[in-house]
Image 1: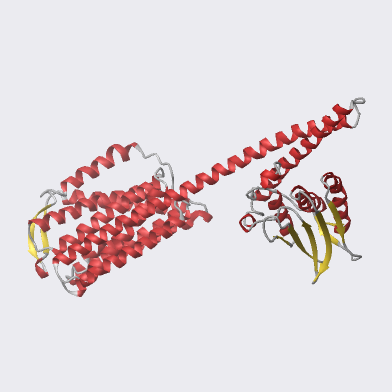
Image 2 (image 1 turned 120 degrees about the vertical axis):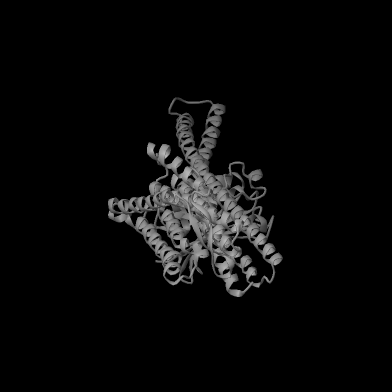
Length: 525
């Protein structure tokens, strides 16, 4: 087999692989879409027509070649029909065909396609071409019916595309124009190489390359479908990689020197092609699964948000009731009842804080949490938070101190968020995770930055726990054993707020039992 013949086969193989993969990519992306299904039918018929069109011209004139030529006409009939069907449905997901399409056009196409396999279209071979291939055939009476039907289907399909382009709003005309452009290029190529050159110059050399000439229309149509968001670009990228592997596999045909090598290489080509189609399908399934999981997570977050608000509302009411009891608003209580009310009030406050953290984390994740930009004194805010934490620290026998200097710590930001979710969170954590010893809170300026530190002599942080500290819902390995009220959202929220203020936050510790230091760095105005 000469190199030129191998190049013919390679070009047809590339076109067949490309059109076939495009058909499966678009179908797998949405099997319920009428447009996607119509393009798939067009692609598969194109592949079948291309393979037989190439094959019949490689065989010497005889019964086998004649039957293959009839097969070309059979698939050409359905090729024209699938083109018309695609033009009719594009770009709709759902499309109801007219009664004449269902009950007249489809049966007529079926009848004509069957006639092409009989002597009524091609009776016999009456001319042998160069190289021993079929040079001419004796037409039968039904060839006229075939020509009329195919001409009607193609012209009707073109008219449908043109009329849709004209009727489409100006901003939506591009996909239709792309299909028309691809169609025009394809028909120019087919008319030039499959009709004009063979008829005028008596050179049928390019007839077997029909698949190559249809490729522009297939590519532009698939791109138009993509512009209508009917298939996924990630899946298309996977398909392109599969296509490239398939092409490289098919290049082996160029180096085939005998029939058995050609058979082996073509078999390998189809195996790789089918494998690429399977990979595309699996990729699409993963994309759909990821989308479904994303939708499920979004619904779960909305449900959690709703439940959280309801629970927070109920706990707030309970907290108000227990506060009224503890403060004697409803009359003087006995020492035992007052102690009970105070404990209940403390538990209700902790529960409200836990639910608030979950809701805040949810708002941060969705990007719905706004940050105020007010001028406030960070030093005064830190002193206020330390003062409020002194009672809890004293109840545990901890020494809580606050050191700073005379510098100004005026900053612009969200005072409430910095106080409640950052400073108070870090100091409360230090109190909760320090069984005994001391906690030092410091605020100073270093290298043009505001540095806020909370250093304790508590349980410390392992290297494994450091990886989870500032993540959403991230707990240390034994954190909930020490602090049963830990939600794992406090440090995650603190980091988000600090980063929104242009700062950073990190933790330092030499390990379990060695205490910990949390450091915040903020830009100094």
